[in-house]
Each structure stands twice: as C-alpha cells, then as structure tokens.
Image (tube, rainbow, N blue to C red; front, top):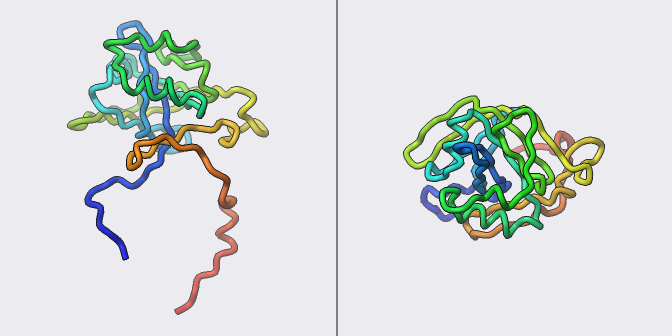
Length: 187
C-alpha cells in the first residue's frame, strides 16, 4: 500500500555541485543540488533567484559546475549558507580558468566543467539555466581509463527529505547489460 505524500519531489538524492560565475568582476559561488543533464553536453541548473551567482551567469553567459568530494562537505555546506553579497567566497579556494574567462573553476574540486549559457528561464522563485559544457577538467587520481570514476571521485549526494549529505554506495548492475537477463512474466 502506498501513502500519498502530497506534491513532494522524490528525485533525491542528487549530486551536489558548486556553481561558479563572475559577478561584477569577482568570482562567486553557490552550492546547489538541483542540476541535471539535458543531453550529453547539456547541463540544467535550477537555482533560487536569490543567489548572487545567478546575476553573474546572466551578465556573462558563462558558469562553472564544480563537483566537490566527500572531504569538502564542510566548505560546500558553508558556501550554500552564505551570500556572496556578504562574503567573498572566492577566497576559500584556489581558482583556475579554461577558455571561458568568466567561469571560475575550483582547483580543490576533482572534477570541474566550464559551460556557456544557452537558455535562461525566469520562474517565480527560481532561475532555470541551460548550459553547454565547453570543457571538462579532472584530476588524474579520479580517472579510470581516461573517464571519471565516481567511486574515486566520492561525490556528495544531497537529500532534501533527510536534509543530509550522503555518500555513494556500491554498484548494483551494469547498464545496457543486466536488462538482457530480464524475462517478462506471462499472465
């Protein structure tokens, strides 16, 4: 038997990211978990329109997506609790840039992506940003055969229901393979 939970969004947990943008010439960052994949090179961000970082994304048409590992949980949470209008969050990290000069990336994050803004939709309480990945950078210690290995990355997962950060568990099955073993039950 199921219990109705109202209009609760049950897609959590989601990967936690630190989004970066340049606001009035200064790098700024916001912690978010409402991000997704639009297509192989497309990223979506759902960001409360109170974030100062949003202003920089709109101003410059660029942003970065930085994936913090479990060991960055305290600073990641801090970034999400303070406004860039009150604290210079860029001083918390060593920054670097790729080809987009207004998409600051965080050296301490083992995987980072620089993105250009493709579409912006203003919603009543949030901004929806759709971006295209221009460049992805990864520390060699989180790569296996030239690809990001999430077991090595140890990304932070965010769950709204428990209001906690979670870690990744063990793999369950191999994609595009385990389904070959499935046999539908006839009635």
